[in-house]
Image 1 (cartoon, rainbow, N blue to C red):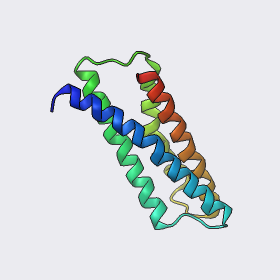
Image 2: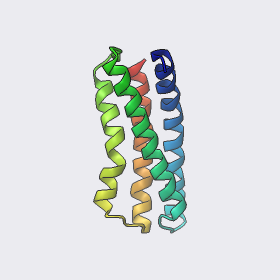
Image 3: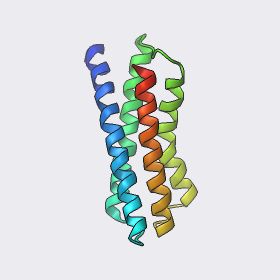
Amino acid sequence: MNLGTVLLLHNRVANAAWLYMAIIGLWSLVNYARGRGLDGNILGAIVVGELMMLVQAALGITLLVSGFYPPRVIHFLYGSLSVLVFPALWAYTRGDTSRQASLLWGLAGLAMMGLAFRAIGTGS
């Protein structure tokens, strides 16, 4: 795969990521508002979202090793945080699926959306 393709995929996954994270965030907040906890569907979506972030990081590392650098160094901070937020929240909640966990995951999803926006802004 040539580097132009890797760069294109990195850009496209970034655009998909903010939308996907917004969906996770809103979905979890709707569950919270309805008095529900997390269910298997949301947890599955969270796992897919984390896998998306790992693929995005792998693409970014491939670009970095190949000599492509983002215009601003803070892009690395946003990328690193986007990979760590969901695992950190999972460790914090210890797998809790209560209503309160829905609120935390909803806020985390929206925070991840914000990180994706900032990463896009600092990477292009």
